[in-house]
Length: 501
Ligand code: SF4
Image 1 (tube, rainbow, N blue to C red):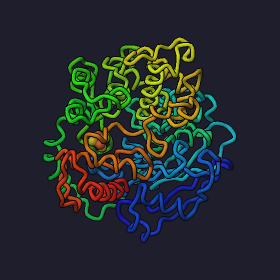
Image 2 (image 1 turned 60 degrees about the vertical axis):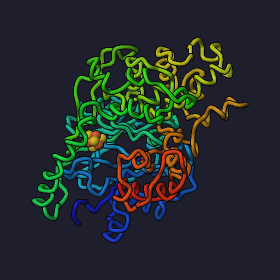
Image 3 (image 1 turned 90 degrees about the vertical axis):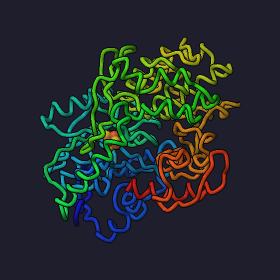
Image 4 (image 1 turned 135 degrees about the horizontal axis):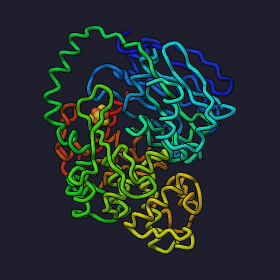
């Protein structure tokens, strides 16, 4: 078979046994790769009625069909499991270089089951899967963990790992890839699933290249596409997804003050990617495997506990979740809050929504300064945002109420607190306001994993940035009119599930 390796490792952390599953060509033709193939395996081969943090519950890492080939933007992979946050299906896709390295180890993916007796990390190479003691990495953040794993093995590979949030079984903990050049499998709390298995991380480095049927043709196609990609992605290259903040605000799509306001023009100018570049906060660019767009930005942190360090800068979603939605227009505190999430291993979308809920509860007197132990949660207070985030990750103090997301916090607080928890199926809604592009409402409501924007890129069609006829949607949609939008949502979800595979 071309493009794939045809093999998935089944890794039992309890007895440190590894076996291999050969993939059937018929399954690959039908389910492609990534979340498609993982869904088939999960349904066929594993019990679905277990608690997500039960050691017997599996978590699957699966590469996309094209991952590891030299094709721009095809570097994605997925972690797939039942979510501790929502209790339902969850796929958490991520870029970087980890998937490419897993493929070069001769694997399309791996499945983790069982619970290790003590903390471990895995080393995947061409010939072996090794289990390494990781007690000394307990409590270490993502940057330190990644550096240590590379340093002590002497292997220049790629690392996926969890931070303290995953170890603490926070239901909003992600799995982070690439160390300081952090890419996050953020959504659905799958960092807690690794934490429940006492698995701190996985290091992968291989040398096997997937077979390509016609390498010359592939190279020619990529070469032909590159100038067009370059032309249309200049803003992504220069400013990353954070370059879209002002346009999104102008469209009314930017969530502001826990989704209660409609305008943040001056704030958007301060927290956008263009301003980060202008102020010299963005110091360099980085890319996922084989992608010339290089949308990753390295940002300098100048306030908070990690002032002086440099890490992956805020993406659009984070500018909204830890910026506008908290009425935080201080870009330095936004960068520091993003860095805390990357280090501690928190999903910035869920963490920001949880903070927005906490701030609204604080404003309404549901939470007091006595409750927070002196942390001032007034809107836009950067210092309070950093302090509360750290405590949420560490699962300490009053902030731990929010460590499992907004629905759990609402349940704990009772009364009218649930009115300030913005979620679908238990997952905080991604940072696109469905009142701007109403097709997003049906997208959020029906998305497989809950409040997810990645299955629901219908705002691209509604805003005119992407043509529906390219995926079989030939009708027109108007901004404040519902006509044809259910069909648009269905077709987009179908398309995105193919893309995710
Ligand atoms: S560098 Fe950016 S555009 Fe390229 S694959 Fe990674 S996330 Fe996508």
